[in-house]
Length: 95
Image (cartoon, rainbow, N blue to C red; front, side, top):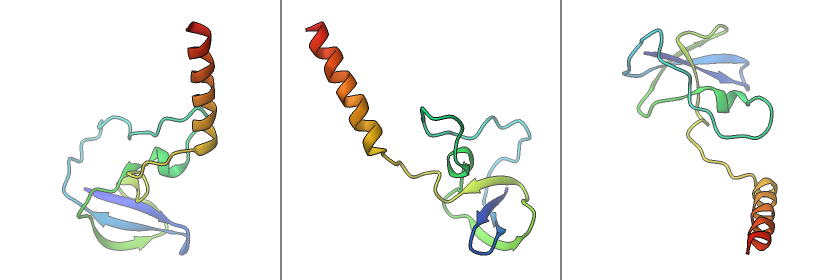
């Protein structure tokens, strides 16, 4: 299966080959849970499989659009504090 990863430094796509199913209807890529509208390219892309081997680069994507960042879990501190405060207030009211 071929994956394309955007490289901002070269303003082109890096191509990777990895074992995988090339089914046309493979479903949607996993998305990070977010309360904001839309998603960043890293959140909306398929995760690059471990062991993927770079095979080249080019101006147009080939295969699935992937991201090196998709597998990372990022905690948004202000949003976490906000949700914790809301949860605390609800807990105090229901108590």
